[in-house]
Each structure stands twice: as C-alpha cells, then as structure tokens.
Image 1 (cartoon, rainbow, N blue to C red):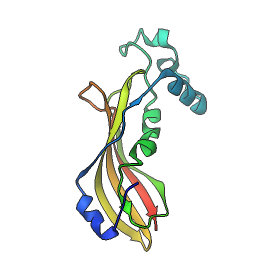
Image 2 (cartoon, rainbow, N blue to C red):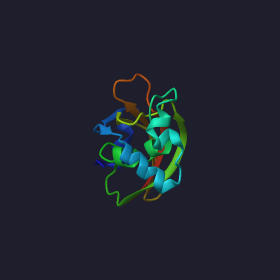
Image 3 (spheres, rainbow, N blue to C red):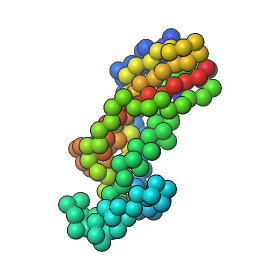
Image 4 (spheres, helix red, strand yellow):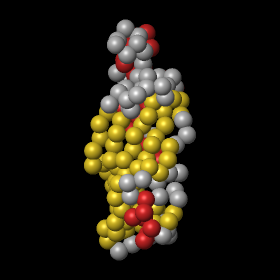
Length: 151
C-alpha cells in the first residue's frame, strides 16, 4: 500500500486511486471457495444445471468476489506514512449489482472517501470499491470499505 504523510491524506479524499490488474474468475477458484465455505449451490458448482438458468452458466459467489477486495485493493489504497499494519474494520455499505459469470475478468476501482485519526496512532480509512466486470456496464458490486491503520 502506498504510504503518504498523514497530513496529505486529505488531498486524496474524493479521488480515484486507480484500478487493480484484471483477474479471471475461473471454475477452480469458485469450486475452492465452495469447499471452504460449504456453499455448494448448483449455480456456482454445476455448469450443466447452471446453463439452464438465466445466467447461462456458473457464477461466482458474491462473497467470493468480495473476498478478493483486500488483494485487489492492496496496491491502490493510500495509508498514513508509518503504518505498521492495517486491519479490516468492516463495511458501511455493500450492494451486489450483477453476478460474475465464471470465465469473466474483473478488476477493482478504488476511491478514498474519508481518512481521520480515530485514536492516537490509529487512522480509519473509508474507501469506495467498485468491482468492474470486463465488457459490461454494470459492476459486480459497490462497497464502502473501512480499514484501520496502526502506526
């Protein structure tokens, strides 16, 4: 994560910080997520049955798409200089807009919404994360994420 002097964080608020690299969502990743979570609904793991649905094939779990957020956001979110570690502090909002079909490529667009010192040596960052699906107008999701940075 890029580090900037804490006093400069306000200069990034409201600005798009960039896009992650594209990532292909393949059936193996979806199957592994199903095994980890116990969510083996056919729409995710059975290509033949899923082909008979309006989606025309298997789709990624919404929470699989969301779980990619820390990895995809890692090189984009600016944090206060001297940050030793950051932890997931939750989400303010999350809307799944459109499913991610297996075989699709996704990337994350990140915008810093707020940054303030919550406690001495602890900065709370709020960011908008939009998971884009290549070739589609609507995103997979829009989330407002919270990260707590420890200096």
